[in-house]
Structures are given as C-alpha cells and as structure tokens.
Amino acid sequence: MAKIGRNDRCPCGSGKKYKQCCLAKDEVAERAAREQRRAVVTTQAPDHLPHHHPHFCKDCNAEIDDAANTVIALIDAGKLDKAEHAAQAIVERWPDIYDGYDCLGMVCHARGDKQQAAGYYRKVIGFARQDPSLYDAQFEDYYQALIASLGPTGSMGALPPSRVGPGNLTPSRSQIRT
Image 1 (cartoon, one colour):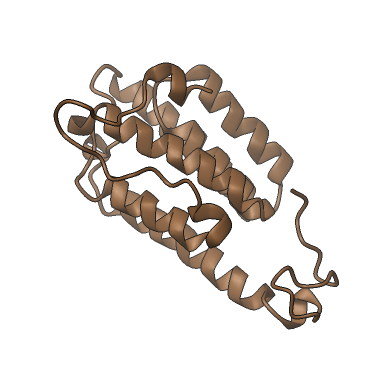
Image 2 (image 1 turned 135 degrees about the vertical axis):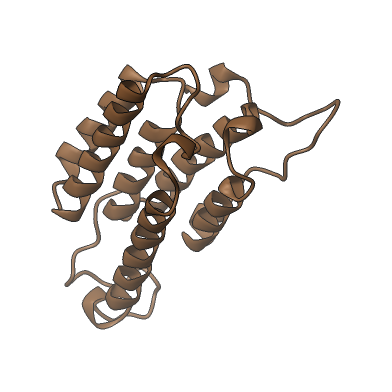
C-alpha cells in the first residue's frame, strides 16, 4: 500500500483532505508507538532484553541491536526504502529471532500499510509463543496492543491467546519464516 499523500482524500471516508482530517491523529499515534518501543528498550538492561538469545554472544547481540537501531533511525529520517532493505538484511542474517520482523512491521506502519505491519507483528508474537522463556510476560501483550492500535485492518486475524498444554496454537518455525 502506498503512503497516503497529505492532499489525498482521507481514508476514513470523511471526504476531507487527509492533512485536514486524520493526519495529525495518525502522526501522534505513530510517534507514541515509536516512543513506547524505545522506552521498553531503554528501561531494560542490555543482557536482559527479550531478543537477546542465549545462544548469541554479547558482540552478536550488540550487532543485532545496532542493526535494529539503524532501521529505526532510517524510519525516523523518512528513508523507508533503505529502512526496509536494512530490516530485510536483519531477517536474512538472523532468521531465528524476531528483530527483523519487528523492524519490517515498523517500516510498513510508517508507510501506512497497517495490514502488512500487523502481519509482521504477528510473526513477532509467534517467536514469543515458540519459546516463552526468552521473553518478558508483557511482550506478547505489547504486540497485541500494537496490532489493535492499527485499527480494524490491523486487528483482523490477530493471534488468539496462547494456550499451555496439548493443542497449543504456537506456530512452527516454518510458519514464522514465511
């Protein structure tokens, strides 16, 4: 989905130009989500971040952090094509961790492609469900709330609550990588 232009008709159906209708609200929501994501990262000690996989050394975890922070900086600078390329490189280099999918979700969100963003955020939730011992208890709630904040398009098809025991709805690795 292409980014909505300031002078385009607002997608809410009001008939007004986007800049005179929902632009300010969307920018505030996007800024708040970005600040909340940063707050979660900065309030935790680096060795205790949920995405720091126990099989990676500190240097590898630092590389992953640097790569993800680069994507966020590119998004903030409005360089979405470069941000997408950098996020895709994270997925290719570290396919078994969620960071690349989180970054791709942020890129899609910045472009206004809420449905695609929600899809990437669902993949992030899938990682947490696959190995819950690596993630904080609030991790999944944060991403479920993020998906819900994307509106009706983003919330359609959200993952159901996780279950423990037989019949667990946790996706397999092959489902996460698609």
